[in-house]
Amino acid sequence: MNTLEPSEESSDELRTDGTHGEEITSELSQVDLKPSRRRRSNSNSRKGRSVKTAPRDRGRSRGKGRSSKRFDAERFMVISCFILIIGLASFVGYWFGKKSSTSAKTDVSATKYEEVLPSAESDALVDSGFAELSGGDSHKAFLHFQKVQEAQGTLPGIDFLVGNSALQAGEVILAKESLGHAISKNEMDDEARVLMALITLEESDKNKDQRGIMADPLVTAESELRRYASTHPMNSSIYRKWAEIHRQRGSYRTASDLLHKAVIRADLDSNISLLSAKEILTKLQDQPAKEVPSLAIITSMSGEQAMGAALSSLQNKSGSDAVFFLERAREYYPPRVFNELMKDAAFDEYRADPKLEKFLKSGSPHS
Image (cartoon, rainbow, N blue to C red; front, side, top):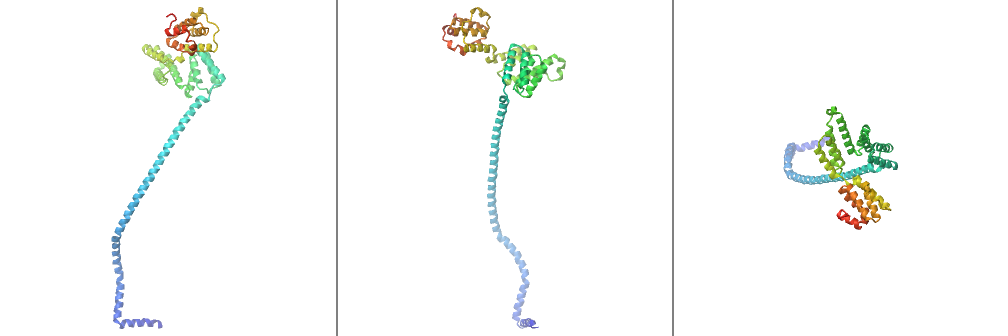
């Protein structure tokens, strides 16, 4: 009961005091009106905020724009540096790769031609084979080369030597087999392709009924000859082989033109008569002659024998006899070969001899 008394008193006070009641009523009315005012103020505040914050938003957008530009510039610099690093790395990798590939090629070629060397036995057999070829016995040459092939089959070029000598000996099947090995091993494969093309051409000439089955062998042979001539411009023998093909077919003008190419490309170092004469002169330098050869046998002398006799006469201080022997040699040799022989170092210490000096200046001891 006591708890109700204050409430009653307060109610009486409100009732008796009108003013206070009015104030309370106004306050209550104000309290009642606050929610609507708050709603209006909230809406207005939103608008106000939007209006007020617009400049701030602009400032923020400007700041964001500046930061985005700065970020774009930094990103551009990073990307540029990254691209530059990739380009530099690619260039370095390419340079090292090219250098390594070049060194690898050098190593491969060095291994191919330097690692496998002929043994003493193989070297002697190869020399014997070439000596037999020079003497015209291609069958014996083939046997010598074949022994090397059996004993040292990895020796570079031995397959071509066997095939070439077998072809000259008439062993066409063995020749084709060995030349095929040379082509597959890339050892003297250019020369082997030429010989294979010439074999095919010769076989087609013998079997004319089969010409239409494959490509024209003459076209194939000339293509191989032309390719070899272009890649070996100082080789004269290829033009001789080429000329023989046209001579067999009656194309003499073409054959003559090809032989002229062979003549102007002929290498003195591969001239047999020149090399034989130089061999005799070198032997006489090593073991000088003890007497002057007899002039009675001069007419039966070969060119290299006459050159040797001339040097022997000079070694025994007989310049007159030397001049007669040199005249015989000049009849035997072409002018180009003879002039090359007269430049040989074996004659250097005798050029002051009056007879030889006169011969060298005039070309004749009687002028």
